[in-house]
Image 1: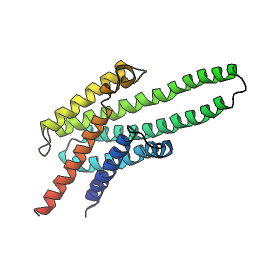
Image 2 (image 1 turned 60 degrees about the horizontal axis):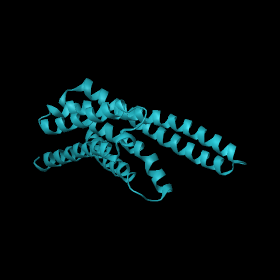
Image 3 (image 1 turned 135 degrees about the vertical axis):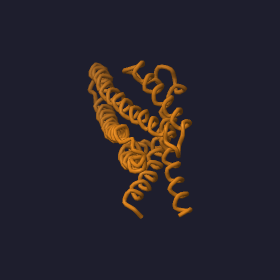
Amino acid sequence: MKFEERWIRTGVITGFIATLLYLSLLIPYPAELKRVAFFAYGVFLIPAMIGLYHYFVQSGKKVKLQLATVFGIIAAVMVNLMAVVQNSIRFFMRDYIADAPDPQTEEMLTWIWRGLESVQLGMDISWDIFILSSLILFSLIVFNHREFGKIFGIIGLLLGVSTLFLNLYTFPVPPAAVYGNLWDFGPFCGLWYLAVLVRVQWLIYKKRAFQ
C-alpha cells in the first residue's frame, strides 16, 4: 500500500471516529466520559484533514487544498484548547463556589465564573471560523471534482457559509443559545465531512477492485 493511500485510509478511520465523538457530545452520558470524548475530538480530526489532503492533492487545486487543510488543523487545535479551558474553568470554579465561606463570596465567585466563560466562548468562535473556512474551501474543491460533483460542493457551501454567518451574526453568543437547537448546523457540517471521507474510501476501494 502506498504512503498516500495509508494516509487516506487513516484519515477516513480517524474522521469517522472524530464525527462519532462530536455527535456523542449532543447526547447525555457520564460527564467524565464526555470530557474524554471532547478532548479527543480535535486529536482525531487532525489526521482526517491530512488524509483529505493526500486524496485531493491529485486534483491540482493545491492552493485551496493547502489552505483548507491548514485551516482544518488549526481548527482541531482550537477546539481541543477550548475543551480543556472550558472544563478547567468549570472544574475549579465549582469547587471555589462550593467552598465559599459566605453568600457574598459565593455571589462574587459566580460573577467571576460568568466572566471566565466568555473566554471559552471566544475560543469557540475561533474554532468555528477556522473549521467552517476549511469546509467552504473543501466544498469549492469537490464542486469541480469529477468523482464528487456539484451536489457535494453545493451542500458543503450552503452549510459552511450559513453556519459561519450565523455564528458571526450572533457573536459572542452561539446561535443555538439565541435561536434554540434548531439553528445549530454544526452536526450537519460534521456529517458532510464524514460523507466526503466515506466517498473517498469507496472510490479507493472501487479503484483497487477493478485493477
